[in-house]
Length: 173
Image 1: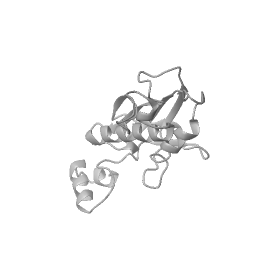
Image 2: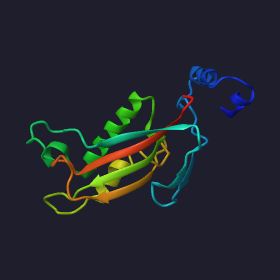
Image 3: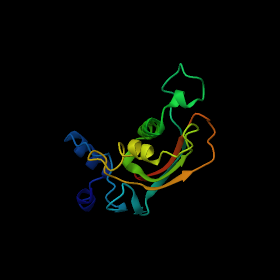
């Protein structure tokens, strides 16, 4: 994109050229965003977002019902931690897609988790199993900064997890 800016070609034209060439890259580049990644854990330790980006805050999202025959607002209706994490992240992915964004545009994530009522344990490993399907993959290598919290309860008693994110995009998009 910088090549095109140097030669006075508009970003819209540059985007059109790349899309016409069949590029799978997003319609804008995030090359100005600097992600400082931990070598051993799939989160960024810090992210620098330069001026010229808008900030999008998504409300916390829990998992969708996967078993409509289960009692309403029960663990059986939503699944275990890994299933709920994946479901929550799919809902976030769909919301971002509707805004022209991807999971790679997320720069910050807060994860709120409760212990399973039966085991009385927080399933951090299950959360990570679901999380790693969306972040740090070959298809989507961008890692957000992230905090994970154990909380006493969530608004929906069947949820084990609720995730909120912050995403960014250049304002010229």
